Length: 105
Image (cartoon, rainbow, N blue to C red; front, side, top):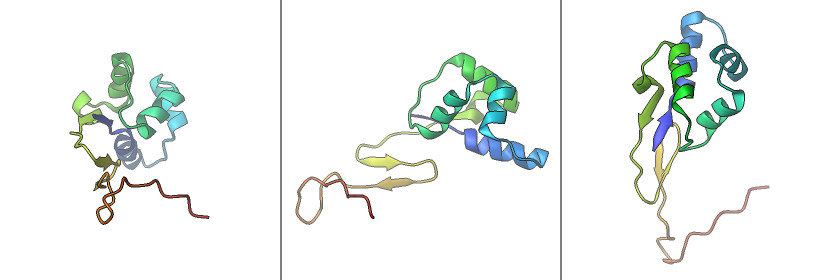
């Protein structure tokens, strides 16, 4: 799966410039729609075109490898932006399929 490193690049840019950069600012200045940027940040495995990648590399002044990285997917492993968490597909004690937990009220 390809993971986009937009949040890291935004944080680096904010640090260098000493000012906050919002997704809206990024969209306006790069020419990439805010919706596309939001999907790249929030949706694992989001697919985008090379024109979008080109605009973002130009905006950040970076190489493609700094914008995106390949993350190997392992069956049964849940991937988050900051760490990997492994959850078995079945409840270990009862050997029954794991049920989705109800939201806490």
